[in-house]
Image (cartoon, rainbow, N blue to C red):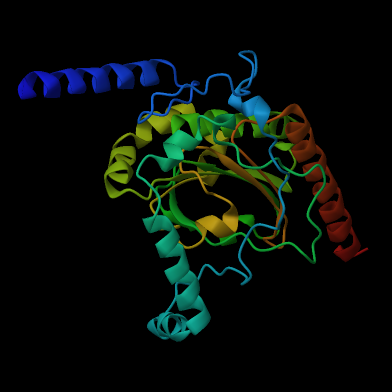
Length: 294
């Protein structure tokens, strides 16, 4: 009798769990068996993405210190390690990352496609803008090491951060109209950074460099970098909170981030990037014309 009672109780529990899984929208109390399906819930036509509104970008992105292509010496590294504010910020970041699950970024793509903010319709003011950090990578044309600081200084640059196939689709939605309009301008350049922080993925990407080179137009090979640089402590500063989506940054001639976008591009975001790029190109052209000898 005892065995039969235990089997019957387990069977009822299993059946209840099956009903709960099959009807996720019904909130059921598994201990009392009460049904709360009568509570107000979203209509079937409404999706989770429609129920929440994404905020606009709330802060300037980037780092406070001007980047340099010169590698840090041991003295610089030691001074950074002895800085209490830097150590506390890194410790706080590590604690935050330790509480994240392995599939957190992947699950986040189910909401708004991984988009966490909407790009501004205007540029960030120059006095408020922060710097794009220096990233080292191998270019497709010569396979030599190049620094983004050396590439971008003195020109208007649109920088795309790539990590997955999905991120390539994302950045193309932002940059295609801008590239079509300004790629012939000598003051403009399009920089792509294939960032693979995972050593295994970085090794696999290095094996397929020839196939990547075939998919990228030859004129863009000098500014296509493959990098395995550790971005752990600057991801938050750049707003790169999801490793599976693409990010686009508009960087001026002074290496400051003046505009940024992420994930799937909205029509107004694509137009904003094109307009902001045109404004910066016009200002840089006037600046150089004023400095040119008459």
